[in-house]
Amino acid sequence: MLTLLQTDPYEGVDAMSGAAAAGLGMGSMIFGLLIYIFYGYCMYKIFQKAGREDAWAAFIPVYNIIVMLDIVKKPIWWIILFLIPLVNIYASWVVNDRLAKAFGKETPVYTILLFFFGFIFVPVLAFSNDKYDSSRIPNDQ
Image (tube, rainbow, N blue to C red):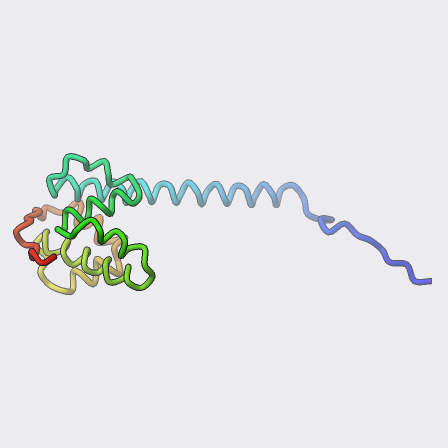
């Protein structure tokens, strides 16, 4: 007769591989948290340059978008556009364009760089000597 051998599916897996996976997960979480804090600080600096007293809002998800819409002179209902797939790309483009114009970056090249490489150009905007001027933003709603 043929006998089926039952084997343990976890045989050969030691505790070290589980610990390594946990360490990798914790390291990724800490790295992500540091990136979030740095990006929030950059937005905090931009909000301060825009004269916002609630610059702390840069660290609050969703509310920071509402504050950004106010800075770039867009109505608050635009927050809905950020929830619609593909439409959110357009809304993000418009917000980045108006933000670039508010800081004196009139060329479309800076809008493109801010849109595609925001992880580089948001800190550049935050730590540069450029001044925010709301009169540079078009008044169209």
